[in-house]
Amino acid sequence: MLFLMDRGMWMIIELTKHIKVVRPEAKAVFPYSNSLFIDDEVKAMIDAGSGGRAYASTPVEKIELLLLTHHHFDHINGVSFFNNARKMAGREEAWAFQDEALYKKSTGYERWQELMGGQKNENWERLLELPDDVPSQLGFQAIELAGVFKDGDVFNLGQTSFSAVHTPGHSPGHYAFFFPQESILFSADLDVSPRGPWYGNEFCDLDDIIHSIYKLIALKPQILVSSHRKVFDSGVEDLFLAYLDIALQREEKILNYLTAPRSIDDIAAQDFINEWEQRNQHVLFWHKMMILKHLQRLEKLGQVAKTPDDKYIKN
Image 1 (cartoon, rainbow, N blue to C red):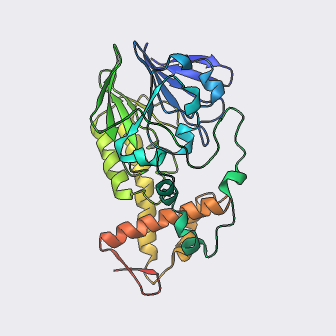
Image 2 (cartoon, one colour):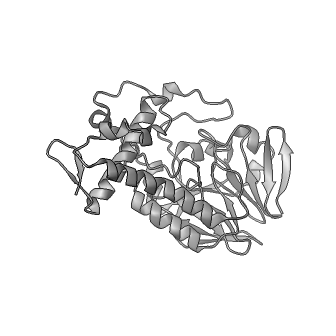
Image 3 (cartoon, one colour):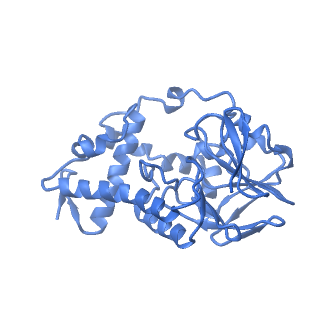
């Protein structure tokens, strides 16, 4: 049974005596995300994006270990709340906290002119006014890591133990965490969103997302906690399959549209793409990046070909 401890507009969800979800004051959407608090002999927090008001009722000064599922801003912007914690991230993504040039490449903005038809003149940092309990600014975050973890590493914190599960695709070093004794899965940004997976950066990979989702299904978790949704305590496999199917159906629609040579702009103008809310140029860019990821995958599978004028057609 889930025990909710209300704190005004947000809450702590007590999954067990030692495993607790920390939810932000506002909705768990960018720039916020859910965190997982392991309140055991060794106290740990998974991710740092729930906002200062949410962390106010957690013993941040006693947190000894902060595990970062990946490098995206809404998961790391509150690192400064955890001054006494050892910070760790997946070994496949340690570069994102150390190498600003590689971080910038990972955003995909080098493709802006190619996909948007002009120079990038919209500043994402200026578009978004951050809440006052988010202490960081958008962009590269230099974080000194005390160490890295890899797939299968086990953390024993007292009565609670859990393992790191490498789940690339959303980002190269994206990790989930599985608590086998409690059958609890923290899936981070493989979040069973009704909009499907997100793969709008340069290093995103849809094939990896597919494999990662099936890897999580194979764990057979009974309780699912993700970064941006509520807690689910039933039907986890069906949730993951429906989530993946959104991306696969989108890909099928793209493929069926390529009966004649089409550009990425042509595809982006179709109704099955316009289901994505296009609030600004950055959102449109990310949508085009996701289209590109589909086209790259279909090309690799031999189902489409790229024409000399950078259009795509079904084989």
